[in-house]
Length: 157
Image (cartoon, rainbow, N blue to C red):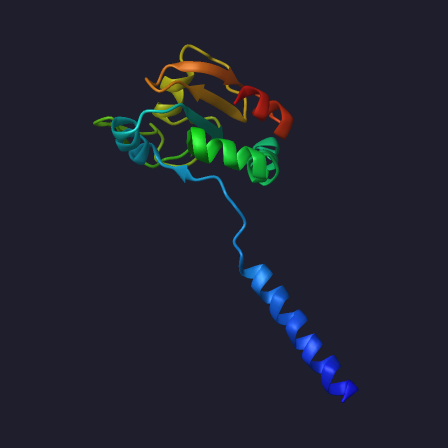
């Protein structure tokens, strides 16, 4: 009888662990620039744009740590549209009725997408990660060109 009780308890514990693991972790609801245009038209709200590159270790750290923090996720998902974009992307992007491209047909370090260059303005020096906070009418409110910790991004948001 004792063995049967231990077996049943073990099965119950294992099934509760499996159920707990099935709960998906909360994530930032990243959207594309294409989706952003439609979203701003139907429901204006502030926008966070996170520009990164494949080679940037601090960009990866922000994606792995800052943007996986529950408080950051809740704040972004409830109050902002969030766009994650590779500044060296060679993909064409249709935004607000205009198609933006990268002049390079191959992905290369230092060849930046037209959309990134436009949003960065006159800046000749590009540093990654770059985070832009824009108000609902899509003008830049805050520009940060460095790694942002959880505490720093929460203060900005």
